[in-house]
Image 1 (tube, one colour):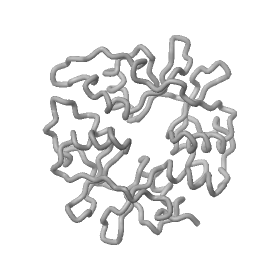
Image 2 (cartoon, helix red, strand yellow):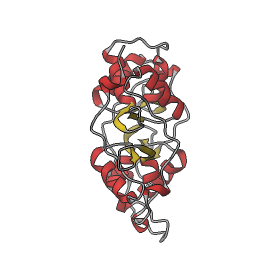
Image 3 (cartoon, helix red, strand yellow):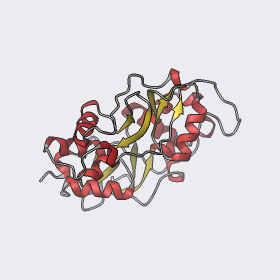
Image 4 (spheres, helix red, strand yellow):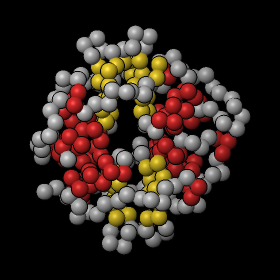
Length: 257
């Protein structure tokens, strides 16, 4: 049995309630973390702030403190939990990262859905479902390569998705764009206060040559691909490379847990 302490990251970055959200954005931009624990000086957790929440703050609202956007209803796990239990907690809370806390509720590590999936793949666990088509979402939120970043930003905020497949005029997947990409170009986002936009297209910022799977792919194949290239979502395409669905680590974990 693999325990959380065997795979968690001990390199924990956390912020205080009175830190500015711009500090959160900087840490997330530099580390790629999707969420940061909010802690007291002794490391005791009091909340968590997500990348989605951090993205709601524009440069013109840079005086906003973490306490104004953090979630105080924090899902967490113990170092002695097994990874399947941690995976269930993630699925239940609809998050991709969990703080690992000790008996005093102090943060001692972080664990991600990709950490758990990596351990599952390494241990050669077998999924209860067989094919990608059995777990994929068919109603996909996506964007066009010619969309402006401000539109994609709003789509992410409204949908709650952290990454969107990018298609061209023929519905062919040509890339993917994530919240991390947008954090790196925060100046390109819309300013709600001024209503001004910088007209930068998705095609300038998206990741090209994106890896995909098809509906008939084995779930084990998809899991291995996610782990090997360190991504949490994969577009699902048909024989003509047209977008027909999407899967993420939560979908894949559900097939195993």
